[in-house]
Length: 539
Image 1 (cartoon, rainbow, N blue to C red):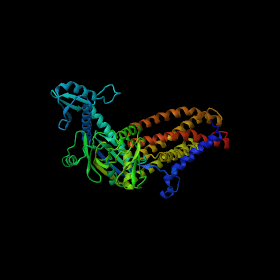
Image 2 (image 1 turned 135 degrees about the vertical axis):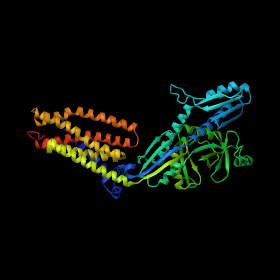
Image 3 (image 1 turned 90 degrees about the vertical axis):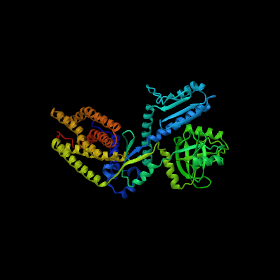
Image 4 (image 1 turned 60 degrees about the horizontal axis):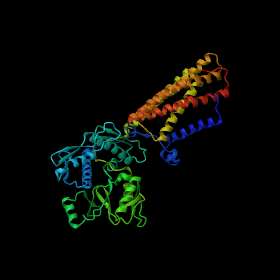
């Protein structure tokens, strides 16, 4: 167990060197780091409580989401009744007072058929669930009337999905590279907590939050876009059933099909670029496989017709379909600049917010308090390190105490290197995790040295005592640290924000302390044995 082959020694030293190089940028100036390779110029991100930043509490406008859900359900019902054989309706409308959809048939003889059709449109919210809760409930409101309401279970599911989707979109918009390590978590039933460490311009963050970037593709209604219909739509908002009116970016407007299956969710990627012929800014896009097929079918069936690209209820372009577009990719052209094209592509990649977000609480945390916390953390870490080091020297003598202290110092450097490599955020709880790790890091050395001392007292020669001490201590060391690691991993996945910061530093500290105590310290001990060949152990 004390024999190390050359490749093992090389591997251990390589790991130590990598850890050193990853930790080094944290003590270098920004100018020096700029000249280093990109792989080795990462530093530990400081959390909101250490470097300051923006703190926001956002309220999700769930009422608009429910209104849209009713509109979608109404259009689905209208389409299904239109396609049903000789099943005619007198009216289908959303009743905002009762949050329901009112349907009136023309003939009461169709009541049973209509009821069966409406029942078939009510799908299970979660097909895999045993409860089989339905999306809608249908109530007869007379001989020819029905009321369709969204069930409470579906309302709760929509609210939950809206909050989750809003959080994902915000994360992709504000931190597309995933390096900021911001805190974003649900707060109550309709609020989101957002903390962005190091944020300098809060107005830019507000601008990103307020942009919806809702993209959709609609066929233009050829027969409806006459002068009279457009005037009626523009002045009174009256459009044919199943249609919608959107203003155009360059003036005027068009009547289009309201329903569409091709929305911003179909986008796989988008990026800014230049038009292949006109050399002006455009936004390139690629559909996912499902929507590429739908778009190919749509364009192949409507050659010669126009389709509109609608962004946030504004038509930015409405080209004519000259041929089937089956490749699943294309570009959007409009009055873009390179900057606006780049901004739009980033927003489209992040996706559209499912609901409007209202900032109900906002504050900026200054870095002054954070610097005080960093200084306090440094002092606590130094005091803890000195105390542990003195304890090891007093308890196990200069040689073995020095071996333990070298392993402890190496452990701290490796923790800093790992935090820099992973781009982790260090918060006050994270500093607490590091301080706790300093105390726990020598536990393994204490177990090993006590075992070595016991074997030496039993009369074993130095090499045998050290060999036996390391071998018999390995199992309890792994047992103790694995159970703590499981707790740290559980905290990471269950907790959020500061709790995660504590869990990350604790988990990294556990792994590094086992590596330095069991492997690095053993290598140092084996090297000392080969060079000095002591007759007795100074422990």
